[in-house]
Amino acid sequence: MSQVKESIEVDVPVRTAYNQWTQFETFPLFMDGVERVEQIDESLTHWVTKIGGVDREFDAEITEQVPDERIAWVTVGGTTEQSGVVTFHPIDPTHTQVTLRMDFDPEGLAETIADKFGFIDRQVTGDLKRFKKFIEERGTESGAWRGEV
Image 1 (cartoon, rainbow, N blue to C red):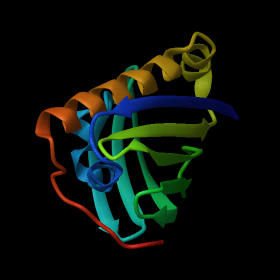
Image 2: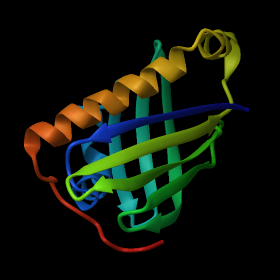
Image 3: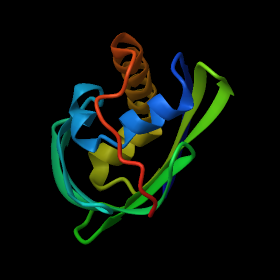
Image 4: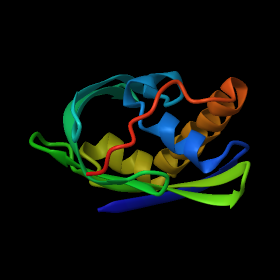
């Protein structure tokens, strides 16, 4: 298993950052390589990705969701092995630190090489930067799900 951990400060309140992150179907707007995310039910999502020319389709189960604090997940079924957590920490009333930690098992030679050369780390850093731009330009979330899992 490999691990990546990246953080970014966003210039919105913790509630706004968290609420936007719960809108999984908007992920393709700021996550490179994510083509589609479908919310199946309150704890199951279906992902379609194309990263480094490799197409993947998998389901992810939300294992923990605490409003304004954290969302944790793990892939279920299929061959893609991944788990992670995104946390939201208020810096002050208008700024939030978003931290993403992901554990994954690279599949095949291409993904193993990409991992060794830091491609995954750079991709996550870029995704967080695009999230920052996305939410700061909007100034408000596109929706919210405030339930707990």
